[in-house]
Image 1 (cartoon, rainbow, N blue to C red):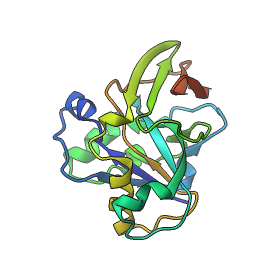
Image 2: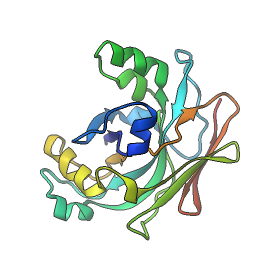
Image 3: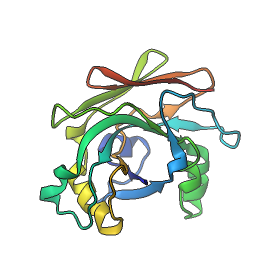
Length: 199
């Protein structure tokens, strides 16, 4: 099982980080050890002083595919959830400044939070995240730069998609830092799909 992640897929998020809008999906990978499920607490690693949440819709791949055509890509997933792509922003900045890969800032243990999966009821999905009871991120999948189908078609050129693979599809504006004692709650439409603490 692999975790495929898409960066800068919402224009407002790209703007808030002062990044250019991409002309192709920005793809990076997280290992299976990055998963954090079942509302288990997230422990801030000792090597980062600026750890940010990035709330995202996550697709679960339902069948194997390679070179999937965009027009058929909707048949390769049937469940979605809300997750968090935790990012060590200080480490990421250091890596980017040197032209180095981001993985140590993005793919570390428990950096991929996963909520409970649901069958999507709408094409344009609302999702949000509360930090200590206050909504800090809100998005709708109708605002993505690259659709789920485009992402699946693009990623499957390089990686064979396998049943159970996960695709984190990008975060809207509103990312920010977490600290010990914070409580994070994720919502798919109006349904809570994760609720955990930062330690």
